[in-house]
Length: 400
Image 1 (cartoon, rainbow, N blue to C red):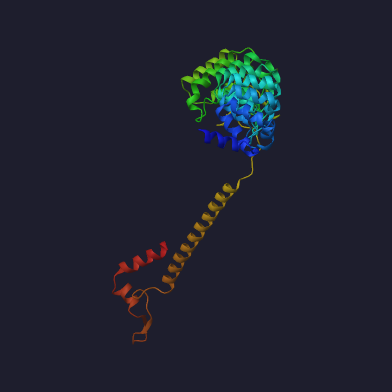
Image 2: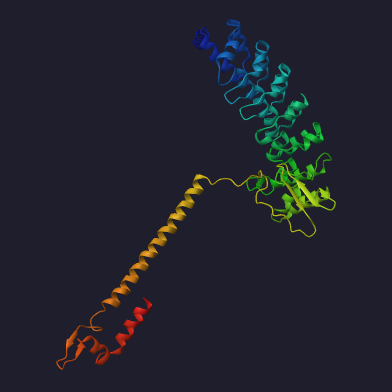
């Protein structure tokens, strides 16, 4: 035991050794080891914050939930709450994703601005808490201020879209109740989809098939909220009712449709009426469609995937171009082969007509009485020979 302590004391004499011991202490949460290292060198924690590029000791403590260790670290280095690891995550990101409520409270007390840090994917600690379904952590982070809920991800997805896509109904309810402004609840992504569009569309996705029951409850919850605009139109000009009407008929589809209809949901053909001019529909993409009479007009065709942006026809990709070129080349080769075969057949027929086989036409010979006759062939075919051979040969020539 004495040798072990002697080895530890020897390692802690060097800067590298103290940093290594600091990381070991952060893994175990040993406050005594931290105090001993700080007693030998007050700059131990400060050096660790500067020299480490992967993660700081506070990242490790926050991820594992070592409260006392994190508190002592923040006493000497409070700005470590803003340090980022290789993925751009702060200690608050890790604590939020792991649901450490008390750790989140300690980090927010040290620096409330830490909740605004975004990782390399644009996610704040609130995004991770919502996507993991950590309701209490979500409540604590939302309590910092309304600006926390306003950050958007790629393609304009809000924190509500993240909750719906991950089927976190508890977190979604909390967000709507705590920050349930009409504009926030009805916010759209870059394709014009509200959370109601997303929740309705997830019903048909095979990837989310195992979550279909939750998606159905999410849709029912959203349409019952007074802030929710059930007739919002996305970039393709579709309402939530348009989306559900395009799905295969089953019990869940019928229940969602019934919930939408009870909430006053309409098809896009039946909204934005213009007296005397039919019905005008303006999508987020700026395209206006006019339906003269929605009672007589046929239903608008819906695409198989509705959560996509309306775009002009895209150019063919390299794979598609190669497939088309291969098909064209195959057709040309097939045509050439047919031409060669036809030429050979025609040549054979012509050769048979010009130079028939022996026994059909022959050379002329003198009969001895001053008359000429065909040697053997004509006589055999028309005189003494069988007429069957001649007929068969003529049939062959006609069909060739």
